[in-house]
Length: 347
Ligand SMILES: Cc1ncc(COP(=O)(O)O)c(C=O)c1O
Image (cartoon, rainbow, N blue to C red; front, side, top):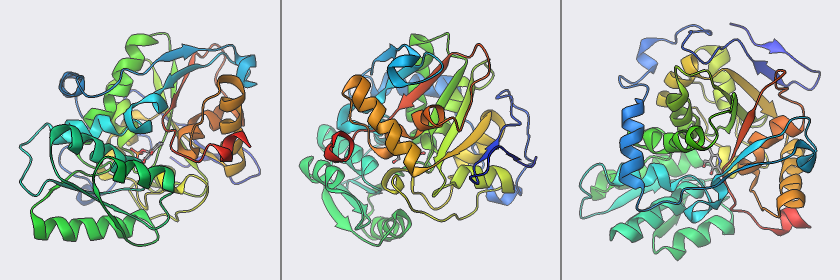
C-alpha cells in the first residue's frame, strides 16, 4: 500500500494497518526475511521472568494533556528510568541468560545505549564485554560503557561500521554476539516493555514507539499482536528505516543523520523487526529534529526529566501533530532513553 501524504514537509504517514495481522504493504521477497519471525507472548513472558532480577519495573504515569501542551491526556511509560538509562538491558539480559556465556565473553556493536546495557549485564553476570561504537557516540554513553568495565573500541562514523568490526572481532575471539536489535532473544526482552505497559495501562488504545533497528518496536508489537491496541512507529525524518521498508515492502539501506542518530541511526531495519512490523504495526510516522528537541524540552519543563533525542522521539509525534490520535484514543508513549548532556535540554 502506498503511504498517504499528510503535510507539506515531506512527512509521510503509513497508516493502512489495523495492528491485527493484515499484510498491508505486500510481502517482501522471502529471501530477505529470517525464518523465525514474531516472538510469542509466551516467549516474552519467559523473558520477563528471566530478566526480572536484573531490571527495574519502570513507572507508568498519567498526565493531563495540558501539562505537556497536548490535546489528549497521555500515558507515559518512563523507561528512561531503566538501569543504564534506556530500555536496552531487557534485551541484553535476555540474550545473555538464554545460552551459556563463552570464556571470551560477549561482543557487541552499538550507538551507545545497547553497549552500556551489555556492559552492565556482563558486569552483573561476571563476564567480559567488548563494545564497538562509532566515533560519534557521545560521552554520556561511552562513560557508562567504560564505567561498567567493558573494553570500548571506537570504529567508524556510524553504527554499521562498528557492527562490521564487532562481527569480525567475535569471529576471531569466539565471543557471543549480543546484537543491538536483530536477535529473537533481544526482541523478546524488549517486548517486556509492552507486557508491563499493558498490565499497568490496560486502557491504552495506541502505543507510540521510537524505532532505530527495530528491536523495541518488534518486541512491543509482538506483545500487542492480536489485541485491540495499535502500535505506531516513530522515526526521525533523517533515519527512516522502518518507514522506508514498509513503503518498499522490504528492508532497504537508508541515510543516517540528525539529532537522534546515536540511538535511532541504524542503516537498515532489522529483518526480525520488519517481519513483525509489516503485520502488527498500525502506522509509521516521521518527525523532525525540531519536533524532537521540543518534546525533550516539554519533558523537562513538565517533569524535570532529561530524555535523549531518541527517548523523546515518540512523544514528538504527538506534540508536533505529526500523528493525530483518533477521537477517544488513550495514547501511551514509551519514553525510552536518558543518556544525553542535560545542558542540551535544560539550557
Ligand atoms: C533511547 C533509544 N530509543 C530507541 C532506540 C531504538 O531501539 P531499536 O534499535 O530497538 O529500534 C534506541 C536504540 O539504541 C535507543 O537507544
